[in-house]
Amino acid sequence: MTASIVLDGAGLTPYAVDAVARHGALVELAPVARERNQAARAAVAALLERGEPLYGATTGVGALRDRSIGDADRERFQWNLLRSHAVSAGRPLEPERVRAGMVVRANQLGAGGAGVAPALLDALLAALNAGITPLTRELGSLGTGDLPALAEIALALLGEGRVWRDGRLVDAPAPTRSIRLGLRDALGFMSSGAITAGHAALLAVDARELQARWLEVAALSFEALDADPVVLDAQVQAARGARGQSEVAHRMRELLAGAALHPRAADRLVQDPYAFRVLPQVDGVAYDARLNLEAVLARELNARTENALIHEGRALPTGNFHTAELGAALDGLRAAFAHSASLIAGRVSALLDPRMSGLSLFLAADPGPDSGHMMLEYTAHAAAAEVRSLATPMGVQSVWASLGVESHASLAATAAARTAQMLEAMRVLVATELVVSLRALSFADRTPSGAGVRDLFDQAVQALPAGHEDRAFGRDVEAACDLLASRSAR
Image 1 (tube, rainbow, N blue to C red):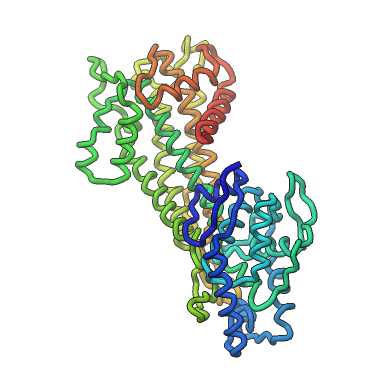
Image 2: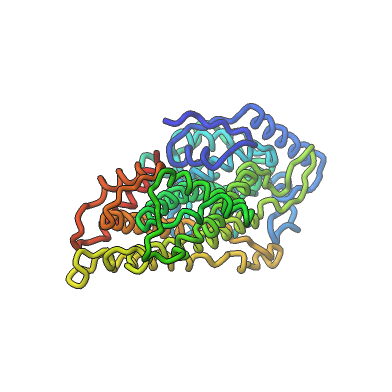
């Protein structure tokens, strides 16, 4: 069991979200975060006591913002808001995604912009620690707050709906401590894109790990092709001055330190194919896009997203729930990774081409009777095409909702879903390159000597079948996927 994660409303990271969502780390609320929520709740109560209007408390929401809610109807209104907004549809979200959103929302509430009932906040924390995960579904968020999912989570904490517990879907248990809705508890709890932010946090962890793996595999391919390492030279990178390019080249030099690369044979071309020569330039873009996503998440996971925002005793109308920045960062990641996907597929093609590799055609033992890895080139390019097909930015779309009051949306939740699909296709692509590079090394009778690739090579030799005979190579790709996943989990 991972150590407890302390939620202070300011320092939540993607890896902390991952620890809670996927690995069962417990959570606790820092005293300062609890105090912020209490102070905000007292401010809400004071505003209402003075008779000041407050969106979602004394008024309806969306296009109903012009409808007044009397004191006598406030509790009923809070319940109605949760029930009427609990409209998610489609496939159930994986429990880890819901848990990611729950921990993000708990942390955001500790930032002090909402002022929800302390018992509701405590119930959220208790559900996380007890492994109780409300059932919510994939469709419903437009990127202007994950209202449907958060409404369903709140209702489950109040004893309505269904929850996952011990791997089974059961009725939500009654709260162990009485929770009475009042003030503006419903909108205060829902006014956030926490579910999307939590999902994006998991994706950021996955993207970092996947990029680390694909550079390791790329280094194996460098050794298999005996590629010219001059393209990784620090002076080459300095001539351009791009941060991501320099960082990727530096990492590749670490991986290949000590490698016996001597691409000076008389029959070699003067330059290697693009798939090797422009690796720092292309993968550097992916590196920068990933860092940008992580920077956006550093803000989003700790943001005060509520409308209205409670700040220093005032209620400030705000659009902080709008996740345009997060959606754009996810769009940017997919676009950047699409470039890298094409490059990875290009390395697979190069390794199978004797004009580039000097090895047997398609790495076949007896080309003609044997097809070798001919069809793995198809697998690689199909995976790369899948990645590219998912790169269309959600930012080119928008919506018109609530009688035009809400006339824009980021569709960040959809951007996150597309990013998850993209990463899955990238994993297959990287695994395919690993299978092909391992066979190329075998045909070249080379044992990698780069300091950073020996461990991966040794593990791959153990995990993947040996021999140059034709076989069902898709099974090799699956084994390579499992190997890369195990390295990411270490």
